[in-house]
Image 1 (cartoon, rainbow, N blue to C red):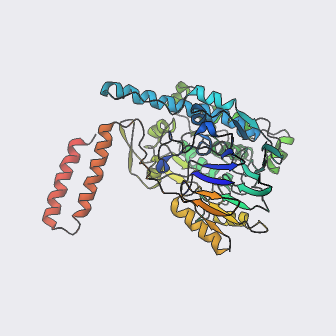
Image 2: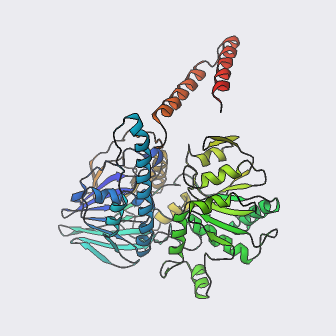
Image 3: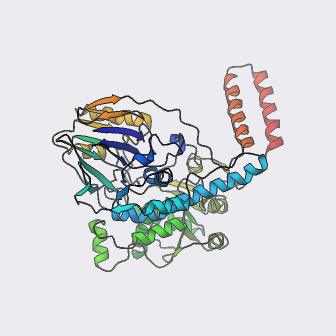
Length: 530
């Protein structure tokens, strides 16, 4: 009875955990590694053909994004998830496959001229379609026999529509152990979806720790605070640009905007237009507007039962084509534009930033986490200008971080959730957090007299005897580099980093030498500035 940590161990993305019971091998999640967590998504630390089943906690790509790769490399078992997760996987895996194919095509277009070998996409749309055929939906609170010796029950994780806490009862040699995987545990009092369910007993718990070292900033009212920002921009004749994750966060925003329109909170322009400029977000919104029985919180359920549409209101437009997207920036009328990607590193949002960042009357509202190194993070950190599509854009729009919007439980809520177990679990495994955060949260659990530790990647644990069978090792993570950066440009960036190292090494040098060095750099900047 073995538990293996294949992904999201001392890392935020790439969730993937293995179980071996009665010679049956299961995975809980199979996600893409992203950003600074990325090692090599194409390399799986197991033979996919030997995996019998995958249980998916929810549809986010860092938990599901390598499923098509698993199928491409020989997996033919069943994929078990909730009904709404299955629906969302249908659009998200197809979208991910499209990105993989497009990135490979772009790289090959440049590589052909440079004489480089052909790059294969991580997986294709055909792989995604084959993956979707293997999905077997199971509703919440339903006992399901996965295989001999493995029983499953999903509880609501309150993180994303359809997200699940996975409860597994494993029986081997007449002995049964219960293990619980939180997946991503949701924040409380979110619109639309329910609060996370509490579980009261387990032998082992594998818990996320994204915000295990801090709490969210309280917000008095999402609806009223956001309405004030929209009113400010509308009064000045400007646009409100909202970079947003296509699935989950965009639908929350539409929920808030529907309410502010009903209450006519934007007094300068109560009938303002809202454009959701993301085909993926549009498809996700259609799913959120479908059959949500058994998935809604009470407030949303009451609205639906009274004939209300959660995400439909006058002035809402879902754009599809690139032509429609371009037209938004040619229309001078004030509007709200919600677009992906949420961190501004790709997608249509970059075009909208190009056309609005330089305008003092506009407001850019960030409603999600911005990773270090992302364009969104640069803007939040006060960048005076950014470069978009070869053009330097001066940042004159108002940049706002809308604190408090998070789909993850914070530290106090994580501790409250884990404190519900009676008796205490034999062992708590802390995953899905930055390396330092996983250890901080593990220590917080130990301070509450819980046995807890943050496993290293590759660690194998024996659940029957409650001991480590094989210690893991920390991999050397590669620096994430967008595929559309040329090798020459990557070399230029590396040279720039070396130049900064030389500058720092001259700290404390003679003023005459430092002045001469500065003049040389200024001449270099003047020569190459575009």
